[in-house]
Structure formats: C-alpha cells, structure tokens
Image (cartoon, rainbow over the protein chains, first blue to last red):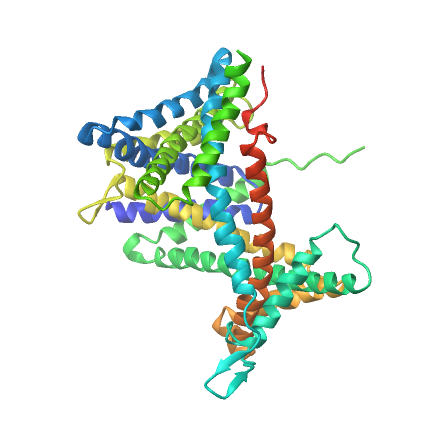
Amino acid sequence: MDATIFGAWVATGLTLLIFSFLYKDTPLFKFAEHLYVGVSIGYTIVKTYDTVILHLIIKPIVENGEFALLIPVAIGMLMLTRYVPKAAWMSRYAFAFIVGMGSGLAIPRTISSFILKQVEDTVRPLLSMAGPDGLTFSMNLLNPASNLNAIIILLGVSSVLFYFFFSIEHSGAGKAVARTGIMFLMISFGAGFGYTVMARMSLLIGRLTDLIEFSDASYGRPTIWLALLTIGALVFISRRTKPASPEV
Amino acid sequence: MIFLRRQLPLLITLITGLLFAAQYYVPHPASEQMLTSATKWMQIVGGFALILGVTSLFHQHAVKIKRQEAGWGYSFVLYVGMLGTIAVGLWANGKESVEGAMTAFGWVYNFMMVPLQGTMFAILAFFIASAAYRSFRARSREAAVLLVAAVIVMMGRVPLGEYLIPLSGDVSSWILNVLNSSVRRAILIGISLGAIALSFKIIFGVERSYLGGGKE
C-alpha cells in the first residue's frame, strides 16, 4: 500500500476517534488522546536532540572546537541532580543562572519594547499638520492612525489602566472612568472570543476538508468505512456500558 | 555549606541578572557577542530542562503500567507513540523530508501529529459554542456589550457575515485594531510593570521561590 494512502487511512481514523468525544468520553477518544501526547513528546524529543544536542553542542565542539559550550552543558547537567536527593541542592545553580539571566534580560527590554514603545504609540498628536494651512482633525474610523482613533485609543488605555489601579476608591468621576474601562475590556473580551471561535472554526473546516478529500475512491474511501466503524464501535461501547444504579 | 547551598545561588542570580541588564546599555560588539552566546547557552540548558520533564512523565506512566493501575493500557499507548516517533525520528535524522521525499518521520508528522493536533483544537469550536450558548445571556449591560462585540467580530471574519451585514467587516476591523488594541496595550503595560518589579525582586534576592524547598 502506498504511504500516502495508508497515511490517509491513519489520519482519517485518528480524526474520527478525536471527534468521538463529541458523543462522550469513550476509550476511542482516550486512545487517540494518549497517542497524541506520546507522538507530540516523541516529536519534541527528536527535534530537541537534532537542534540542541547535534547542532548546538556536538557539531560546534567537534568541528569548530568551541569548548566553551561545555559550560552550559555542565549547567544543564546540574539540573539533573534533582534525581539524587543528597545532591539536589546543586540544581539551584542551574536555576539561579537561568532565572538571573532571564530577569536581567527582561528589565531593559520590557521597559523599552512594552512600556515606552506602547506609551509612545498611545500618546500621539490629537491634531495633524496638513500643508501650510494649519491643523486638521481626521475622523476616518477605518484608519487606526486617524486623530479620532488616537483619542479613542488614549481614552481606552487610560480608562483600563485606571480600572486596574486600586490605590484610590472608584467613586464619583473615578467611577465613570472605571466603568468606561470595563466597557473597553468587555469589547476586547468579546472580540477575543469571536476571534478564537473563528480560528477554531477554521481548524474544523480544515479537518472536514481532509475528511471529504479522503472519502475519494482513489484513497479507498477511508472516511466512509472508518466513520461506519467508529459509529459501530460507539454503539457497541454504549450498549456494553451498564447504566449507573440509581442512588438510594 | 549554607553558603554553597543558599547564598551562592543567590549570588549567581545577582551577578547574571546585573550583567545581562547592563549588556543592553553597552552597544559594543563584545557585548553583542556575549548576548548571542548566552542565548545559545539558554537553548542548551533548556534542552536539559526537557530531559527533566520527560523523565518525570516516563516515570509516572511506567509506574502506572508496572502496577497495572486503571487505564494503564493508555499509558502503554503513550509509550508506544513516543518511542515509535523517537525511533523513526532518529532513523530519519530528525528530518521530515529528504530531497523532496517524505521520510517516515515526516509521515508521522503529516498523518498523525497534524490531524491529531488539528482535530483536538477543532473540537473546541463545539465546546466554545456550547459554553457561549449557556453563558452568553445578556444579563447586564457589560454582558450585552461583550456579546455584541463577539457577534460583530464573528460576522466580520466570514464572507456570509459580510453579505448579511455589509458593515460588519469594517466594524470588526475597527474593533480589533482600535478598541481591542487599546485594551491590549493597557494590559501589556500593566503586565510589563509587574514583570519588571518581579525581575528586580529576583535579582536582589527578595523572591527566592525558584530555588525550591528542601534543606537549606
């Protein structure tokens, strides 16, 4: 059998086993779920071995004599002392190095990229210069850089930041600002939800497209045969499962 | 011994933290080189962290199989999937294709991992829709705003939505690019301030939980 045709049967079978969860949590789904975890871990191990062990450690040391790379190897090995209770404290050196380095790298970069840059993009001119005549105010909502949108963004950022600022009581004018912040947050959560749903729908369409493609005679119609088999298995499982005895 | 077990790790954190914070302000080639090397070092140490995680998983499922606990057969499936993928991956030298031809490792990726991963995330579409049906009742003004924003964004992302409500595409873009980005920006600023405060606490030894418990 051709590898692609066999692959089509396997891919279809696994897709249907995962879809069986829409009926209920059955052994079919559990099988596919555990297989997914196993294959994913195996894939990650192979990729890490190829990228880290081969290309970052062995090749540079053997081909270029970069023996300094033995230092991170030693630090990494220290992590494994976690398995030796008496020497487990040595793993702290590895964690101290990683955490210290990560913290050091984060401070200036976070200030630069995530605070100053974001503030700079928020505090934009509320009016624009248009030729020699003077100032204009663009109201085009579809252009994120328009003056009206600049005001809306400034309002949104300020009110949301204020909403999360609990050092003063949200009463009077503060309450109105905080409520504006809540409204912005709700719109953002709604937009995030809608966006996520559509992304998942896109994945679903992708899987259904594959199932339709694999229902073709050139593949031996795995979608039809395996769908019948899965439905049969689900019927068999549901009949075998005894109903729970009523509580007394 | 207290120095080696408790104080030296804190000293390592302090020195590496200050060194790499200072690196940003020194635009010298040697400083850039240090950053490049350190990034490589982090990747290598990260590889060992993976060993730590994977051996823990190996151990957990091995115990389940050995004791034949409930669902041990699934642990066996996990083992078979993992060892099988590792075997074909090493056989193919970690490459999915060689000169355009798919390897066995590529086959595992294309016909097992991609469908499993895609379907696993795709079924979330049903659960999100079901959760939305149950919880998306416009009980308050805030909930109504959330619902309306979600519906507009969903309508604006598909041709049918734009056909039914012609303005939905533009309104959806405006919500995502202006209203949503202003909230994301505010949240990002807040998170960043917190991250900086935490980084300072770690570097100066105020926050020590990353060292774990155990003996001093």
